View 1: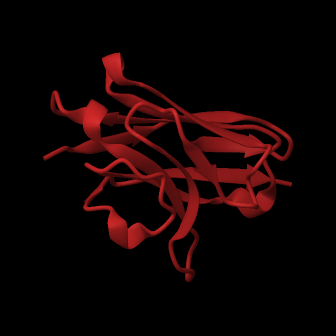
View 2 (view 1 turned 180 degrees about the horizontal axis):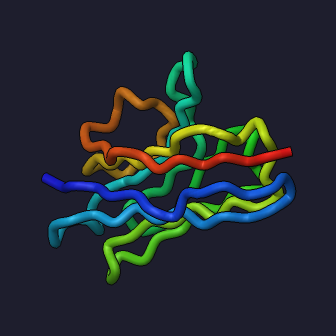
View 3 (view 1 turned 60 degrees about the vertical axis):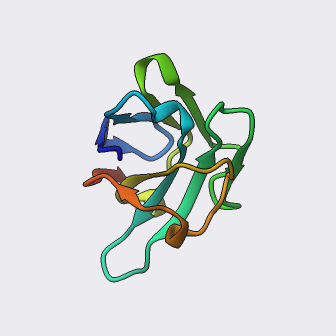
Length: 124
């Protein structure tokens, strides 16, 4: 079992950057694939990026490819989402999710553990 806590959200102008962090509890965090999803008001949860337990494989949505980078430091039990060239349409609550398998999946139904989320607001 793992608990997840996100941090790093905030308000930034369009074109700016933010780095989100997702810290996991438990010594087995290095065996979990982790993903970031976003949820805007009135919309369904949307995939952003995912990484396998070792970080060797990553996957991105088309909307963030080339702008966002997912990485992890298993010694710190933390997964990061570096967000560059932010756009107003990136505004949402960002949630991290984890599951103990080896896939960089984009399906939220595959993940059993979720954090509470962190708000990202991009102003124009």
